[in-house]
Length: 354
Image (cartoon, rainbow, N blue to C red; front, top):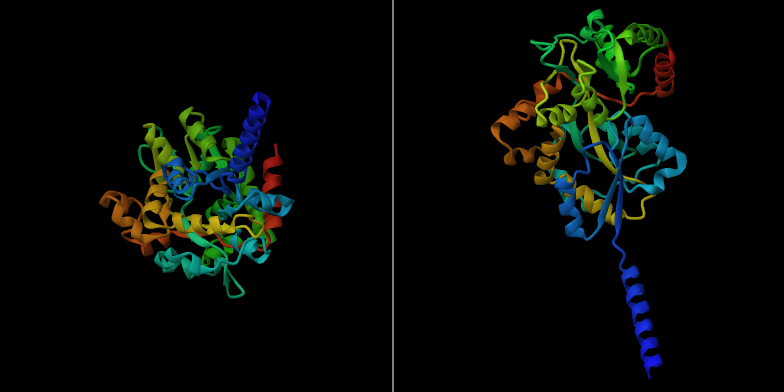
């Protein structure tokens, strides 16, 4: 009898184990920019949908595209491409054409963003605008008593070895602005001729003695400031937010040449095995209350203007939600770069130069 009881007990344990395996918690895998999977807003989604959200972070748009094209697309369900690569990702069939009836909150998003052609390909919509913002000039306020009024400050010989730039094509755009190639048409930044790219390369090589290090992640730039290795850099509002939280004297400004900006979209990968859960995630992430929480973490401007109702008047003003039209005139939103390979070739030559 004892042997029989032991067999029944063992059998019941196997059945319980098999049952728990069959109820395995669904997982949603993200490949997104830093700050877009913070527990302060992701945890509630996990609890509501009884799932696990796992995030990998990318350091540049090119890193995202390389992973998607390199056979890793099936590893991710949701991605957050910026406006410089969103079109090419959609056109290449790497993202899912969206059924907007599954995303009711889409109607709340800013028409200024949803009307742009960035994620519209052959009549289909491939992404939802999520967050947007500038590539501002960040500076140590103990070194600069007044905000620097020009990107040219990065080239000032007195800051030799005290400057950082992003290891990204946006540094090419910035140098092109300094050279005036955005006049009269800002979109020229994304369509530079060979002659203009050669001039940009020369300008960036002149900057190299001032560069302490090129940053590749937001955390890396935050540490460079915190350790007083640098005094100025192009950055993101995310780093401004992070540094202010630890009381570092960081300033943020848009110089007189203006700056580039970006619109990050959320897309579902065509290879996702969790498309329905991914739809629910997109819907959750563009809800006004979630958008406010993302803004609290990143300092970015929400794509859903109704998030403003949960903000203080000061926060609404700092995010320029009170005067979006005029603020956006100072930002040249990233666009698709038809000759991206040539831009990358120039950028790699700059990095390799001694």
